[in-house]
Length: 518
Figure 1 (cartoon, rainbow, N blue to C red):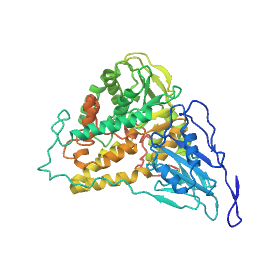
Figure 2: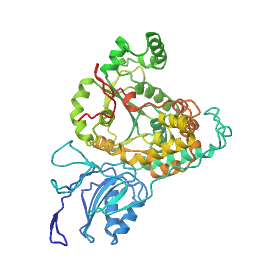
Figure 3: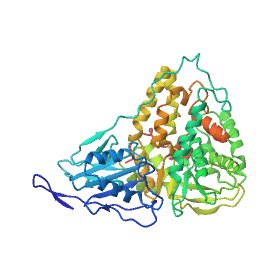
Figure 4: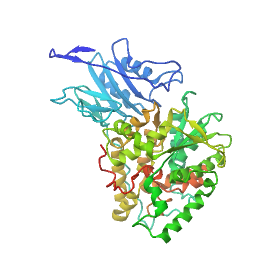
């Protein structure tokens, strides 16, 4: 498209988009071009804010709604009512303005190259092919709804409840997850309600051709998502549990030779004996020990808990084993996709998501059954990300309490909230969508986020209690009440370590997760 500006300058606009089509009964072409000349490039899902029937395409419905608006402020108001992950570029012909934005939490990728003297053009893209001298891409901030002239309207950031709890001597401590304290019992039920509603909105009306899977580590977050998804997906429809494990030469070397310079052999032997208790039943099923990573063992344990609680549901536990050679071969591709993210930690997390989203692995009908090749066809992947930031699941929250008390915990939770839109959601979206799939985050629906940030800090966590109880205490109580007994006490483990995706090379120091790999 070519336009003439008020200063007689010629402006060229090129729009390109493709359609994954998880909504509607008929194929829809993108960009959405309205009769009045408006153009919408849409990558997202609308769960609330616009009435979209199961047979309708949400992008087409949004395009129609926006094209009826003459006042550009009404466009901003409409976008403000939407709940769901999205990135969009919208040309409003009447005002000759180009709007572009991501949802407030940045759950969909949108990269931008801002015009410069040497590269005088604006480029917006939801994907990346890596570093390139022709442009300089960065993640588009989420604070504004942008226009071509970079005019923006911003809203107030989500503020964490600043109320301090009573002094510790007066604040009752949780005795066990089976006995809910009176001061948090209603919050437990409310969290279950909001989270269940979030999952329902995100798994309902998914076409049969695009089934649902869970990025499944066996931790409390992913297990809760799986259990709640079971409540809203027809019982005759299988749910895939995608569980990733990497062949890690460094870890294998430690198992064979011991951790030189690390824990002594006596402690090492004790640790092996403790781990063997949890993996003994899995080993009897002829599981390759090189892939019995922490997330595999936890996942197998939670699989049995889900089977007990959800009779009649077919859970496809997909063992996705990644040999070291395949990990190395995929690095150039993954580095390009995740750009402009470029640290060691970015790569470890992106590799885990890349292979998990691909969904190629094996399944077993029972722990002792022979594995059968399986490729997940699910196009919607549930991800438990967000609970640690909202509910105090990281070790740094416990550290903050030790150094500065409850006020320091509140301050740290506010930092977590402020960082969510600028952290890893865009990177994760690019990696997962490379396989033609999309991730949905039940903990990051605006309804759940608003509920949790509004709760007093001592209702969400209690750093006075041991790890596995005090961290994310509210979620642990809710999971226990649902019947997820084992999941409710499972300790936090970062994905890159639970899958053994980090620190691969023998004899090579990674120097920490912030070093650049590109």
